[in-house]
Structure formats: structure tokens, C-alpha cells
Amino acid sequence: MLPEICDALERAGIVTPFAIQEMTLSVALLGTDLIGQARTGTGKTLAFGIPVLQRSVAPKDPDYAEIPQGKPQALIVAPTRELALQVSNDLAVAGADRGLRVLTVYGGVGYDTQLDALESGVDIVVGTPGRLIDLCNRRALDISHVHALVLDEADEMLDLGFLPDVERILSMTPETRQTMLFSATMPAAIVSLARTHMRHPMNIRAESSYDNATVPATAQFIYQAHDLDKPEIIGRVLQAEDVDKVIVFTRTKRQAQRVADDLVERGFKASPLHGDMAQVAREKALTRFRENKMQVLVATDVAARGIDVAGVSHVINYSCPEDDKTYVHRIGRTGRAGASGIAITFVDWQDLARWKMINKALDLPFDEPQETYSTSEHLFHDQGIAPGTKGRLVDAAPVERKPREDRGERGERSERSGSRNRNRSRTRTRSGEKVAGGADAGASASGDAPAGGEDGEKSGSSRSGRSRSRNRRRSRGSGGSSAPAATTE
Image (cartoon, rainbow, N blue to C red; front, side, top):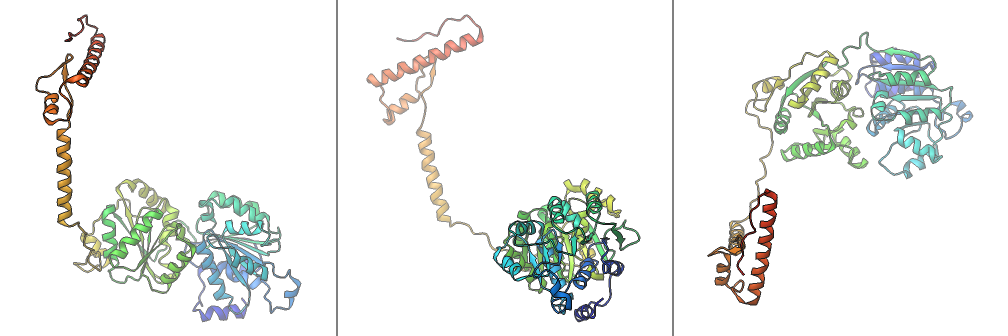
């Protein structure tokens, strides 16, 4: 490694390499294609970041004038905006003394800043597939001269449907490039992609056995919980011993917003992070989370790959993950860089079958989740919660009720409407004859309709005619031979 990269890492407190870094650096620095496979949270970013920085030509190097000026020398493709920003931050730390220009491009923000940076010239581009293709179509980004291409979290790109975009990006780069593919899992489609676009890649696994995909330093707790009781459980866990930063993962964006609002109402410093938020708001939430200005981040899986924040002590799966890969990536946000962590997963009754599949795939000992409520003794014991702890820091806001006089006025209105409805009646007939003491008498007494006269006779004959027709239809329908009903002329 170059001394200037070593010095920059030492200043950041990074002096001991992880297994994936130790095994891949010697191969990647030679320019060999490789596939790096390791558990999430074990330092894959620097495993490809250091070779990219060292093999790129810096402006102070003597042969910098011989390369195409302003064209990117390396391209790193990441599936999410958060992961792209995280990779750029790591490159900025490791390459602080190299002087290379690193640009991060992603969707959700305007093009102007990115276009200006590309026009002035960049050395390394980190971006998401969609925005990279957009910039290439605008002819603002030229990746035909890159010497290194990195696909970070390739299995996540497959899950998000980015595989066709990735193949299109690969077709725009030179065949002589070095290709590095890093991932936590290796589905068949990713293996096929590697065989098609890589030249005799070296496959490197950081563990001798990959059966246990979760980080051993992470303690896992699986609770069968009721959905209405989950916020109260989380509120009590947030007051347990050794709780620092907490990430709560939800299945939907609406659920993330609701849980974050509920925690704020309970007095906790929480913020959502989901796809419906503007990019500026997402970056602001992550910055506050990193700077310890906020304790809880409630996120959807869009953030599962991009959050590399020190001090995350707990990860809580508010809902059961969709599959074992999602579970591994979620709980990988804690227990990173050799630290210990706690992962809590809530399983609803309807998700028991899904959880058993995850449990079997990862060979975990939690086939039957323990039924748990916010008052359960084992919850307090497992999480180190002090007895008597409630799930809120502030009292619940009082429920506003309308003044009593409003309710009285509403009652009077209902009584008036009821009296009007009671006066409303219909004329009943039997075989075409008015029933004695029926509604006509009441109507005559109240003056609502005339009891006799020409209009009364017309309406009576009209009702009589309708009654005769009904009786005729009834007779035909029953199949009887009874005579038509008698009428009074």
C-alpha cells in the first residue's frame, strides 16, 4: 500500500485489517478480477476502495498528463443512495492525501451540481445505476476510459431489479478493465453475471464456512408480539441498559412514518427514513443520527445496505423480514467492525411460517418464537430493563373533547329531526281500500294534505289502481285462479 493511504487510515484510527481486506488487497492491487464474499459489516468497502485509490493516477503523479483529462478513471456502482454516500465518505477518508476528485451521483436531487462537477473533471465516480445511465445518455458522463469497475452489494442490485441497468453500464466500459464484485450473498444470477463480464475472476470468501451468515457478536432475540403492543415494547427497550443508537426496520414506508411519529409522541428523538422523503431530508436524518443528535432511526429496507454508523447498539425488526437475506442485512447494521450488538425481531402470528423458513435457512435456534408482551418478565430480563419502566418519557397528550353545550345542541337537533321523521307517514291500503284510522286521518288532522276534494279523489284512485295491479301480479305469480280484488267505485 502507498504510505499516504496508510497515513490517512492511521489518522482515522484504522490500523488493523479485517479478513476480507487482508485476503483481497494483495490480489486487487495487481489488477486481477475478483469476487469478494463476506458477511455484512466486515469491511468490504475498503477492500475495494484502497485498490481503486492506489491504482488511480493522482494529479500530482508524473504520468497524470498522459490520461484523458477530466474523464473518470474508476467507477463504483451501488444499489442505494445511502450506500453510495457511505462509499464516497470512506474513499474520502482513505484518499485524503491522494488528491483524487471523487463524485457521488444519485437520483432524487437536481442535475446541475453533478453536471458542473463532471464538466470540471472527476477521477472516481460513485453512483446508483439509474442516475449513471441518465448522465451517460446526456453525454455528460464518459465511462469508456475507466480502468476499474466495482459492483458493491451486487445481490441487492438483483433484488431491486437493477441487473439490466448494470449490464448496460458494463457494456459502456472497456473490456480491459478490472472488475471487482462484492456481496454478502451470491445468488445464481450474480454468478451468471460474473461469468459473462469478468475475466477469470478469483473468488475470495472471508470465512472458511459461510453457513452462518450472521455476525457472531450480535445477540439475537425473537419475540412473537402483537402489533398494537410493539411501540410500547420498543419504548421500554430504548430505556434499557447499554442502549446507544437504535435502528428500527419496517416493511412499508407508511409504517416507518407511523412508528417514528409514535416514538416522537412518546418523548424519544426519532426520525423516519424512507423513499417518500426528499433526498435532502434523508441526508439530514442520517447526519443527525451519526452526530448523536437523534437516538432512533425508523427505516425501510432502502437503508439496510447504506447505513454504516458507529455506535448502533440495537437493531429492531418491527415486522418479520421477507427472507433470510433481508434478515442478515438488517441485523448487520449492528455488531459492525468487531463491536457487539443486539438484534430484536418481532414476529406476528401470521408471519410464523415465514420466520420458520428464515430460521431454517440460517440454522438458528429460534424455531418457536416466545410469546412476548410489554409486561413480560423475560423481556425485562433479556434486555436489562429496570422494573417499572414504561414505554414513554412524557405523558400522553390529553384527548380533546367538545364542550357539553355543543353536545346538547346536537341532541336538540336530533330531537327536532326525530319529530319531523315521526310526523312523516305513508298511506296504507288493503285490497285497494284505505285502512280506517290510517295516515290520511293523521294527515287531515295535521293539515299536511287535503282529506277530500278533487285532488284527494285523484290520488285515491291512483293508489287504488296501483293496488289492483299489484294484486293481479301476485295472483299470477302464485298460479291461483282467484278473482281480482273488489274495488269500491
